[in-house]
Image 1 (cartoon, rainbow, N blue to C red):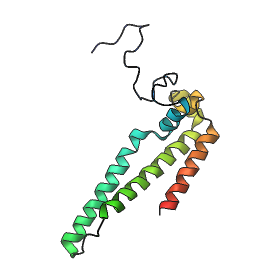
Image 2 (tube, helix red, strand yellow):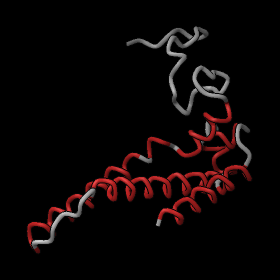
Image 3 (tube, one colour):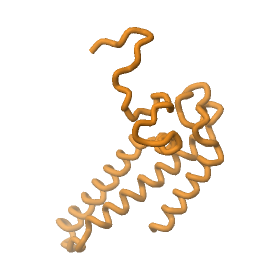
Image 4 (tube, one colour):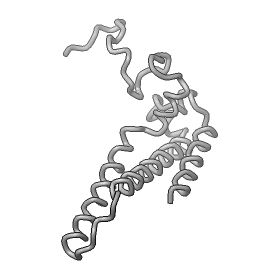
Amino acid sequence: MSKPPIGEKNPLSGKWTMKEPYTKTRFLSVQARGVIDLFRPFTLSAPFIVSMSIMVASLVFNYENFGTGIPPRWYFTVAQAGLTIAIVNAASNSLNQATDVEADRISKPYRPIPRGVIQREGAQSLAYILFFLHFSEL
């Protein structure tokens, strides 16, 4: 696939990537999209999947080696723990971007705080809310 000539509009204007300009609000408002980009959703899937895999593997290991029974509705516990780890990762992503604003203005100007879509204090508040949600799930 070749690149479009300079000056032509990108034909894929409905993409949900972070580097795309925030003026294209096909699905979400600018602020909602900024919040999603602040959490960096593609980095949330790895801890979610890995934590769930580790918990399932430990259930199987304990069942095979120690004869412990697998608890009923184990999948709810595993999913909740994986979601909790993803929430903590989203909170740390938000807090990281709020504290590294000056570096991000130089190296990653496409992020929502350097672009001015989300304020630094708002990102910190979102991080604290997510950390509070994490503690309430424990």
